[in-house]
Image (cartoon, rainbow, N blue to C red; front, side, top):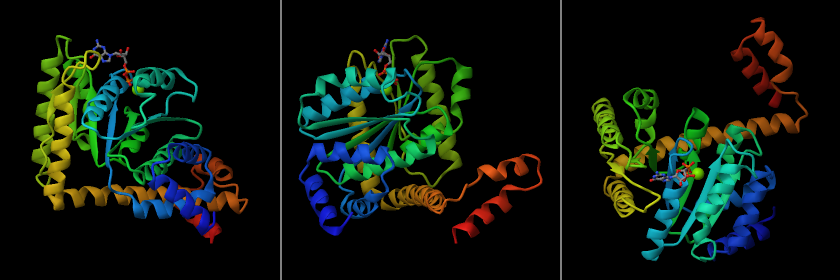
Length: 319
Ligand SMILES: Nc1nc2c(ncn2[C@@H]2O[C@H](COP(=O)(O)OP(=O)(O)O)[C@@H](O)[C@H]2O)c(=O)[nH]1
Ligand SMILES: [Mg+2]
């Protein structure tokens, strides 16, 4: 992509051209490497949107909640882009289709952009592709860019690592389930939501989450933001205004605590560069016709080789 084309596309995005954005995200999904000069330019121009990650187990009510949040922000005059990333569903699959239905009320609203991404590519690739799509959206005149993703395993939570503020959606559950879900959730959540709060175990789940957050704050005294735990009923629209306000408070906190914000953005960017670096190495290997890790797997499996040797050999062959 030459400089003239980069400039034309960047200008279209700056002006809010949604069709250009949609086409670029499709090219990102397809792994179009020629976009790199554009992404470079867009990253440098972006950063004025509030980017929010929403994650949690499948069926927790994330999409319903997101649709309600979008409606709330629209009444405040904010323009919103939503990227729904669901690694577990094929592109035409149920979850993504369901998201379309839930988001349908915003389909004719020019101030809302909704786009799904699913597993056309492997999981690590999807997290990186979502990061690229966010670079595109963040270069546009949106007030809020929201990325919804299923959060269960490590790779899925990678997607929300791109967002400065993360809403973690849970449903009421038994004590053992909260313990099981605990691993890592206090590391990524800034605002906790117990959705389907009409369930009798909702209050107990809120208390357990508050205990876990208190423990995490004792272990990490450098963290100055105290994550709130809110109850919602997304289907009825209950608790949504409070959730929107809590998200605003979180952004306000980081705006007024630059050292806290910098520590976090540093962690995000270290992760992001690592992600791009890995992709770059894999592309170089492919481009040079190198068969990559595959032929070395049997020796690794027999322990006649080791991951350290394999990695340094690959690096040497890239040159
Ligand atoms: N009872 C109840 N059901 C809800 C609530 N919010 C969402 N749901 C339902 O839960 C199901 C999953 O919702 P969805 O938004 O697709 O969840 P996601 O997979 O986390 O995006 C749908 O059938 C929703 O209608 C709620 O507050 N209470
Ligand atoms: Mg969903």
